[in-house]
Structure formats: structure tokens, C-alpha cells
Length: 312
Image (cartoon, rainbow, N blue to C red; front, top):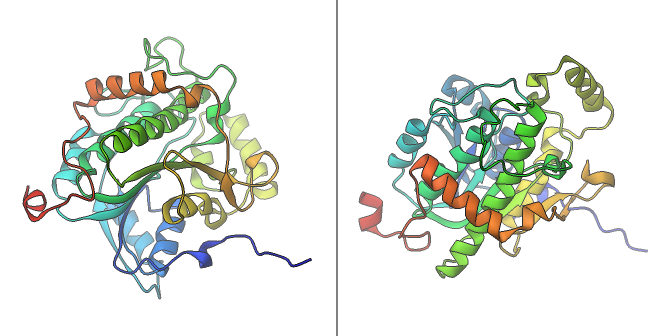
């Protein structure tokens, strides 16, 4: 029997001449994604909150055929998101919504939103819609297997989980929001006749610095053990994202590892919960997100970038 090697970052198609924006790119899955795309020839923008850390991360991408640059973006501050988008004046083939916070103590964004929902979903929602006039290929949003938490839903009437805050509940809600956002974005893009596609991915269990910020001392201890015993490294964890970003896949596809429990392995199409597949919830989340951020679906879409649009 002939053995077929599993897909990995060396199988990336040539990315020469293409531009990618990767949020949360100074460590973990983000820098692994940047490194792979740059080595395949892309120009990659590290969109990061701390530009000094971003520059240090960019310095690790050595010997790549492509290039990298660092720009400031704080997804927990809508003014920062607007400033990042306002400074963008060129086509971008790939927008990779990778940044996130996980299971952190209760806190708020600059705009008063629960921080996990505000950063993981609302910040990316605003960024994506503001950049869509320039996106020419696809948007990939990183979700998580945590969207499968029993009873997980969008708490539309208490999005900040006021009086009922649990870090895991907040994180799971934000990751469900990532999938509903992708579903509705793809529907809107298709209805508008845009060639741009929206996809989602999850890394399985990847050892990154996210686990170290967990609000629970016990969970941090468990995750330290899991990072050594179960987890794959950040390069393997980035593979579903890279696969979603570069392979010919249907819009709204969801990619994850092919191993037991989707914890590790090569990238493949994976399923999602009924709650993450509900078009009515996806539409309601879009309307709610528009109200909260003041950002709506643009009238000009990627693939239609003109000199006039680029001057705005």
C-alpha cells in the first residue's frame, strides 16, 4: 500500500505577490502562521497590540522568500480597530482573525464589552467589515473546540454575563460567535456575488501562551501537564488555519485536526454543533454586533478594489 504523506506547511502553494494580515501574530499560532506564509512568499502584516513584541516576533522570521511588517492593532479597543483599517489602502488577499484571549478573569474592553466576547468576536467583526473593501480572497477566523461546551449559546440578553460570569462560559460564547460570524459573513458575501470566502478553523490542543492566562490555578496546572503530554506545537496547531487560507474549499468550511477528539493531527474538514450552524442566530448576532460596534457590512467588497477605493 502506498503511503500518502499528510498535509503540512511545506505543502503551501506559492504565496508570492499576496498580502496577508494576521491578528495576534507575535506568538503562538499567530507567529507560526506568519512564518509559514512568509516562507511561501507572502507579504505578511503582523497586527499586534504590542508593537515591540511584534517586532521581536518578526525578527524570528529569517530566510523567508516573502516579507513581514508590524502594525498596531488592539482588538479590545474599537478606536484602534478603526485606526488600523483607516490606514489600509491596498488589496489584501488573506485576513486571518487569529488573536484571542481565553478563560481570563472577568474584565472589560475599552468600550465596556466583556473582554473575551469583545476581543475574540466584536473586535474581529469590526476589523473584518472595515477591511472587506480590500479583501480579495478570503477571511479565516480561528474558533475552538470549546464552542461545543454543553449548553453553549449566545447570551443575547446578557452578553457581558453580568452576575453570571464564568471564564469558560465567556470563552465558549466567544468561540461560538466566531463560527456564527463566519456562517453569516459567507451568506452575505455569496448574496452580494463576491468571490471572497469566509472560513473558520481550530487548532485542536496546541501549546501556546493562552493557557497561562487562565483564571483558574487548577486549570493552569492541568493545562501545563496537557501541553507536555497531549498538545501539538504551535506550528502543527496553525496547520488548519493555513489549510483554510490556501486550499480550494467551500465558503463557511470549518477546519481542524483529524486526530482523536480533534486534539491533534493533520488538517481536515470538521463538524460543528447545531448551535453553531443556526442561520437565525447568525443573523441575530450580526445585527447585535453592528449595533454594538457601529460597523456594518460594506457596500464595496473585495475583488472590486479600485484606485478610487484605495484613496479613501
